[in-house]
Every structure is written in structure tokens, then in C-alpha cells.
Length: 373
Image 1 (cartoon, rainbow, N blue to C red):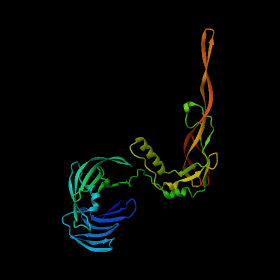
Image 2: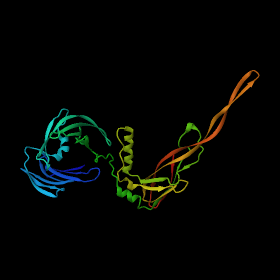
Image 3: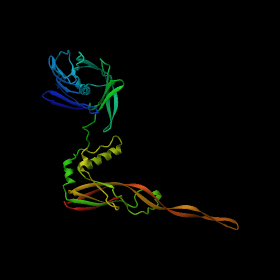
């Protein structure tokens, strides 16, 4: 469910699009109300089985079309009393003076071609404090508002933020033990202030004349320490076929690194994902021989981040006690010495390498050792 609310000309216009997970149909609605009283002005919907067009005044007029029967009919309705258009209920909940013990009874206009009831009542039965845990921004103090549809006893649970009145979640009972649950996806959440420029980074990795050539390897003394024993292996080159990643560094990326570093230290909320278009800035290359060599071309001047991850095998020598030699004379035992043996062993470890490389001028050929320190 995606919402868009526009304020203009003393009116509020709410547009919504509902799409089920199986994408079997789309329902679109647009409803306009007075921006002070919320009194309905117009309503248009196009759903799976019906189309509806309403204009509100002394009477409610419009047309109803059934996609099943292919028939249309004119409407001239006369609901009594004050009411709101049902589409605004989710958004109006957050504007109410919610508090523990708060009660309210709300009349809603809803047209159903199979019913003569035009206005239905919804009662706020309970308001209580609740902690909502967002996957993006952590814990929030909220109101849990329980609403009952009087004609059917259907139950709605609204979770409303105490500070900014954001609607975090709505639960709607569907009967037979089923519930429809909609959760706020926080599309406005973006703690990274710098913007990611897709067009700029695409040019940076495709429109230049510079190249980066390099060697990826783990140092002989990297990996496990194994009790301080000496590692006798030489350089551990990234195996042939190892994927090397390169992308331009930017103010956006550096801020992303800094923000997530703080989040990891605080351990209060999930890390911020990269911009969904970040993949356009990434180039891939593979190690083409047994000595860790790789190449990138078509790069413009700038600073780049290069990354590699690979498994390698390290070997080391160690000594062990193989036995003891005991000494005796005429009077008995006089002492002993320890006998040592030597052996060689190996283990598999992983190298995770990241390095920044700066190209100063177009056409430059930059050599880099991508090594684990």
C-alpha cells in the first residue's frame, strides 16, 4: 500500500495504490476532503471488480460500475449526520489526542453495493503504551490503539508514534483467524546526508583512459598466530579466478562508512543499506594467473576503493615432545632430558583486503599491491 497526500486549494487529496503480494490486481483510490473539517468532497476508485466515482454535497452522487456484470448505475445517496470518508481513517488516527484511557466513536462513509448502510461506526476501545521496534531505526515509544467496527466486531490495531504521530503499523482482522498487517517501510529514512550520484559514478568507471594493475596476496605472517609459532609459508596469492571489486570513493560512500561504524558501536539499530543504485558504480575483475594479478581499465581520475576476499593455506613448523631420556648410576636415578621432534602443519584462513587508490590524471597507469597487512 503506497500513499501520497497533497495539500492545495484548501483541500487535502489522498491517493493510494494497493497491490497484493501475488500482483494479481491493483486497486487505486483518490479521495479529496476539506483541509480543516475533513468533510468529503470527492472519491474515485478503480479496483479488481468495481469502479466507483462519487461527489459529495447535500446528496452523494456518482456512478458505480461492476466489472463482473459489465453494468453501470447512477447513484444518488442521502447519508445522514457528519462522517469522514473511510479512506482517511488510517491517517486521522494519528491526529487524535491519544492517551491512556482515551475513547472515541467515529462515523465513516463507505459505499457497498450489496448494503443499504452508508455510515458505519468505529469505536476506539483502548489506548495503551507500546514499544515498536523498527528494523531501520530501532525502538520507538508508541500508542497501541484498538478500534472495533461496531457492525461486524472486526478489530483494528494501530501503532502510532508518540512523538511525531507516524503510523508504524496497522493490523486488520479478516475473519477465520486471518489478519492483514501493513507496516511502515520508512521510505523517508535516510541518515546519509550526501547524495549518491548514479550518472557521475557510471561515467567515472567507463569514460576514462586510466588503468589500475595490481597483485592481490596475503602476507606470510598474516592469519592465525597459533601460539606464536613461526609461519614458514611465502606470499599467499589470491587464487586464479578470485573476484576483485573496484568502485569510486565519494562523499556519499565515506559518510555511509562513518554512519555504519557508529551504529555498530552503539548496537541499537541495524546498519544503513547502500543506495539501491550503488551497484552501477561497481566494476569487477578476476585474478587471471597464479600470482594474484588483476587489471581495471577505462577509469577517470579520482580515488577508488578496491576490495578482495579469498581463502589461502598457511604452513608452519612446530616442535613437540617425543619422549624422555632417564639417567642412572650405581646409586640410582640421576636425572633426565626431554627429547623434541619437529613437524610441519598447515591451515586454511581467509584474507579480506580493502585499499584506496588515487588516479591523479587521465591516462595514468597505476600499480597497486592489494595485500593483507
